[in-house]
Structure formats: C-alpha cells, structure tokens
Amino acid sequence: MNKLLMMLAFVRVAESGSFTAAAAKLGVSVSAVAKAVTRLEEDLGVQLLVRSTRKLALNDDGREFLVRCQRILDDIEDAEFSVKSARETPRGRLRMVMPAMFGRLTFLPRVAEFNERYPNIILDLSFDDRPVNLIERGVDVAVQVGELHDSNYHTRLLNRGPRITAASPAYLKRYGEPKVPENLTSHNCIISNYGPIWPFRKRGRLIEVSVQGHLVVTGGEAIREAALLGLGIAQSNWWTFRHDVEAGTLRPLLEPYAVEGRSLSIVYPPTRHVPSKLRVMVDFLLMLCK
Image (tube, rainbow, N blue to C red; front, side, top):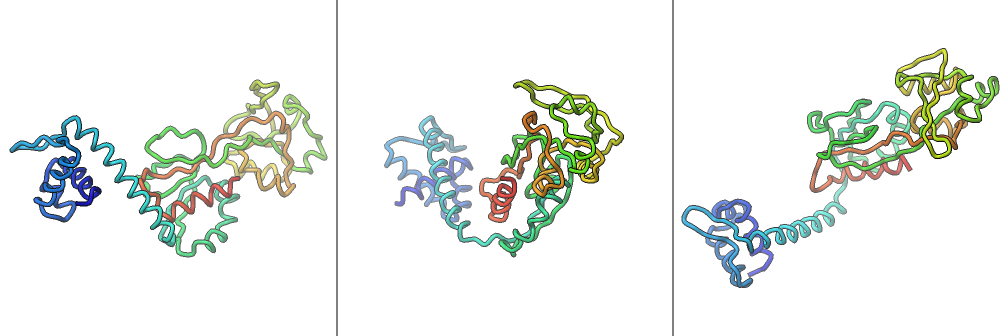
C-alpha cells in the first residue's frame, strides 16, 4: 500500500477522531481507512492510536508522528499548488483599498500597464486613508500607512522612504533656500493637520523645529498643490512629492537632515495559498515602489 496514502488516512483519522469521518472526507470505505492505519502501524512497529469502543485517541508516538505527517503533506500540497499556479492565468475581480495620494500619484498612472499585462483581472479600487478591516470590507489587498500591529494579516513592506521637505523653484528664487532646519523659522511653511512641529535628524539625534506660515491645510493633496503653487515650504511622506521632485516642479530641501518616513505596506488576509491575481498585484506594487 502507498505510504503517502497510509499517512493521509492516519492524519484524517487523527484530525477527525473517527474512522467513519475520515472515510467520508477521503471518499473511501471505513474498512479501507482502518486497514491503511493498521498497515502504517505495522510498518512503523509502533501503535499510533489508542482504540476503545467509544473513541480514538493519539498516544505520544501518534502525536509526534502526526506533526511530521502534516508537515510532509503540507509540503506536497504547496509543491502542487506552485506548479499549478505557475500555469494559471490570473483572473477575476481584485478588491483593493489604498491611500488617496498614493493611489492618484503612484498607482493610477501605471494602471494601464497592469491591465495590459493581466487583461483578465478586474480592479475594484477604493481610496481610504484610514486603516480598514479587510475581512469586514471584503477586500483582497490594501496599501496602508504607518506601523501595522494586527498579526492576523499578511504584510509586505513597500517602502519607508525619507520624509521630504520641499518647495517650488519659484518660491526658492524669491525667498532663498534654508541651509539648516533652524532656518525654516524665517520661512513661510505650509502646515498640515499634524501640526507645526517638523522632525529632522542632526548629528545623529532627532530634533524638532517649530515652523509657522499663512496656510494650514488638511490632507496630502492640499499640501502638494499649495507647494506646487509656490505658497511655501512643505513636508510630507515621500510618495506625496516623489514624482514632482523627479519632474523638477518641486525641489527637495535639507536632505542631509531628513528623517525616516512612515512605512507603506501591503496588507492582505491570511491565506495558505495566495491567489495568482493577488500575487501579481503584490509584485506590481513592489515594483512601483522601488
């Protein structure tokens, strides 16, 4: 008798506590399951199950052998899934949530590229800057900002780029460029809803500069627009200003003093096997944030 089939029968009996239930799961007769377990015990030369008229129970040898059998069977299942998924065409609806600024500036400009690669995936995209309960919302994957403490989810770090301080060339031409963080106190700064205290790192230690300005705004989009209009110096997460800095419409300031920004991570519900539509999206997001 095939050793793997005997191990599978033993695992199903151990998990269900019944030859009858195990037989139903495997789609074979009760006698076939009982014969497989007995043959396995004979081959091993040890008893794995303590049988009585009322119930079955694992003994010490049975508990130890069960763990090893489960690991072997899981490895076989993983190997099969890997081969099958490599041939599978990613398809279906993929429900996503991500911060508005990241979505608008980093993800949406590249959506056509993703659609061309994976035409059978339908993206169902929502913007939300708050952490969401993926299971309650029925979401397949989310991009979230900040430290994540829910161990019930799988996570992948996308980026933890520097916190960027920037201004438009027009503003800097008119008012000059700050050379050290303390110079900001004499500049017009665009203050966000996080407050007027801006962090920097100087000589290896964290310092905070209290800035001031004529404009207080809420949200990364408003901060970016105000900076592009030359209304002052702004500070925000790397993805807020990333493309504007690359285009030259904003200039980064005080880079030697920049602190680490808030983390940006992919989050998805726990699953033993990651569906191909989710796997290709995770790879795509990682590529966007290099």
